[in-house]
Length: 243
Image (cartoon, rainbow, N blue to C red; front, top):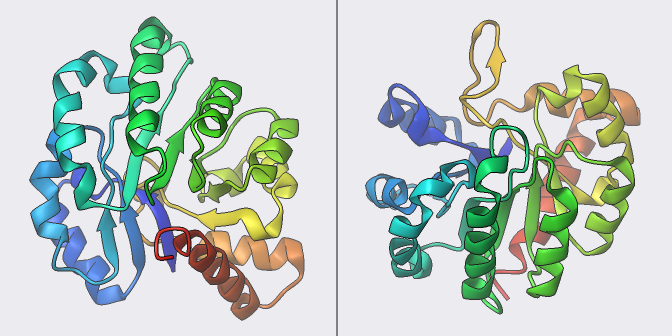
């Protein structure tokens, strides 16, 4: 199972979750919301084979961006994964729109021409995010839990970017429409744990089997073919940082 977006550090017992993930053999990219969170978690992730930690600056933490940005630059060389970053122009984030735009612009400028994979938050700001990624020459990005206009998906994938799907998306009509629009070769999977619940409990990192089963159903393909396709897509994404 491949989980390209979760938040292991936000679980009640992150070290226990890490141990379970390692034993399960899942491939996981765990996000952070601020560089200070990355600094706390990175030593625990470093020895693990199939789990990687991304360096993040979440748009909903914008009031802390100015203080944290020097640490972002200081830690940038430690990881090939950047996230969670992006813009949030929803009601929750709109008041810090200016700060978000400044921070996102600085982040993209800092990683321009570097071999990094970005996990992108784009709620109510999908068009702006896409334009900024393209303008800054970003080659490898995943739009996490996309909820924007259907016709923009075409431009996102034409630019070479991926979109990651989680169990919440396969259980909503809007999510299903979005999934149908994404080309198969631009699909990846995620949990966004612990923010999604399964059986009245927080989803665990790597619990994407229901998404695989859904793809199998709508594509009328056996599970092993779905697993092969997602693995192939992930390897294609990784090829951008191991050239």
